[in-house]
Length: 66
Image 1 (tube, rainbow, N blue to C red):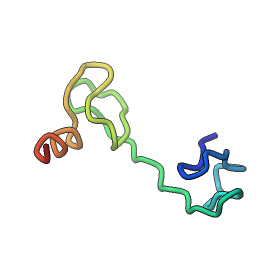
Image 2: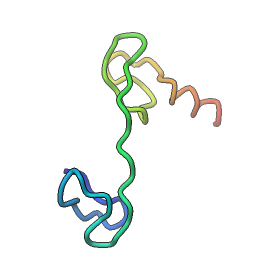
Image 3: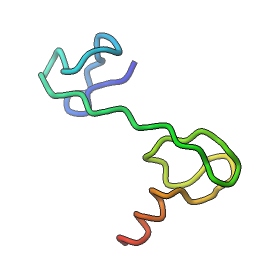
Image 4: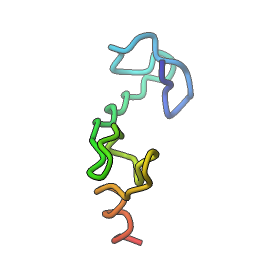
């Protein structure tokens, strides 16, 4: 089970919308994307594929900003 990014308290269940300890709204879960090179499952927040090292669309967007 994941934790609140504000106070680090665990969420009571997967359906919780708010933290029971501090009341902060739970951030949305990252979406699942597929690596274009090897087909591995990644999250939309990954910059590189952890299987083949290919840069993701998100990683390319970050590179352009730096």
